View 1 (cartoon, rainbow, N blue to C red):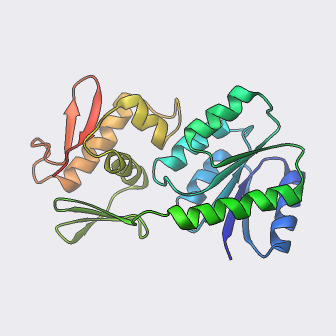
View 2: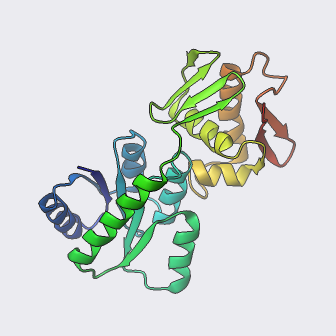
View 3: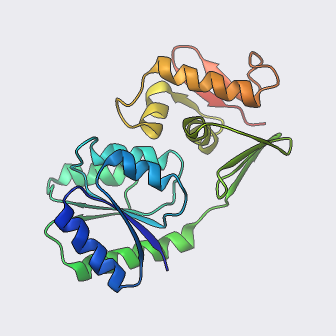
Length: 225
């Protein structure tokens, strides 16, 4: 049965969701902060996320951006008290699969979960990316160069995945930052540090820019090889 991550700081609501989901046979992990949710989702054992927007350490929309940096297909259902139509559209534009307003019916939430999981099963994409000598195994969260595994840090891996998912396109500093850390989570100087680390590990010569090209003052692009 599917493993579901609940990111909700209201303990009463989190416990209600846990009880309802367990009754349906789902595996459950509950966390109360955005950072704990992002870190747990990155382990790759999650099949669906239920997300509150009003978290204590980060707005939920930034959690969506961070998760979408390395997983375009992981279903995310927002459960929020915010009723503003523009807020819903913002969430959907960011990649949320569904939006349920509080207070909610547990029966309706279960139906939305089943629908999202069915959709995910039908739309799951290839789990590998190959570009020249570079291979990313998304399922194993592993990177290989000419068949040899390259060990990247967590954020180096996330940055590389954003570039790979947009191969051939120039991505602005802000776009990459929003995808990996959420809006305001880093800056261009910090991103350059991670990019330098990636280049040292995947480029034969970091200055040749065989895989990753720098567009000065704009951002970065993964070359299509």
